Image (cartoon, rainbow, N blue to C red):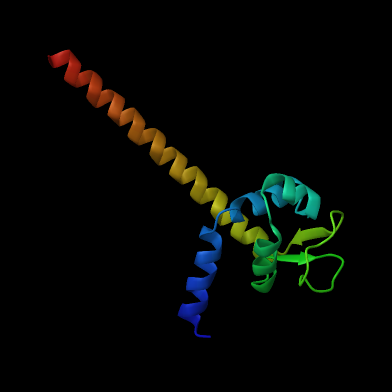
Length: 118
């Protein structure tokens, strides 16, 4: 698999529903969360955890394979790579939120200026 193709696959994984929820749940619990904790944050997380493990973002602390759904008490931990990705996603999330707030504020200013001129 070429570098470009792998990058596209990682970006597709990060864009999937529930990926952010899985990462943020793990980050909020100190980098390690049980399968039950993760499942409380997002439905059916096993497929996302498998993909994230394949790219080295998380590890199962019990070892073994993820061929079947993990047990509720199975702990997962963010790797250094997973922590770095979460840091980037948090910064992106904050940036997007600030842009949305700025755009909304600008819209309010334009609307009030328009109605004042009328």
